[in-house]
Length: 125
Image 1 (cartoon, helix red, strand yellow):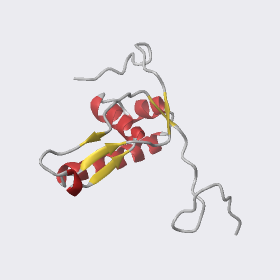
Image 2 (tube, rainbow, N blue to C red):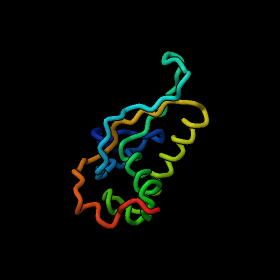
Image 3 (spheres, rainbow, N blue to C red):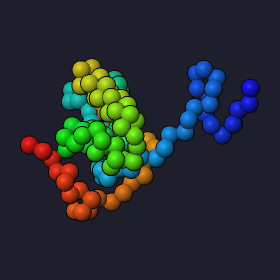
Image 4 (cartoon, rainbow, N blue to C red):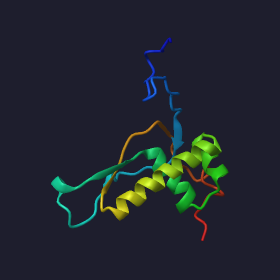
């Protein structure tokens, strides 16, 4: 069996597919949300990637369809669905179990958001 040593090997001893960069337009200075009343030394954390946060923004905040969210991030609808599912699971875990949410990293390409790129994708009421 031959391996490409530049690619990570998963738990099954096989090379995984590299993650493609996802386009995000969200800019946030916030890196951690933490529940009040828990000391930092005893606090558990959940790591939410920037692409997961962007998917939550499109699906839950802007109420965009899966197709619109996927197109904006430059991924397939299936991948977008996987990203949003992972993000929702992590957020639910943090809220239910009083864990902090650390926002960081992920395979992203940041794009500046301007008025023309957001037309038609305003938050629905």
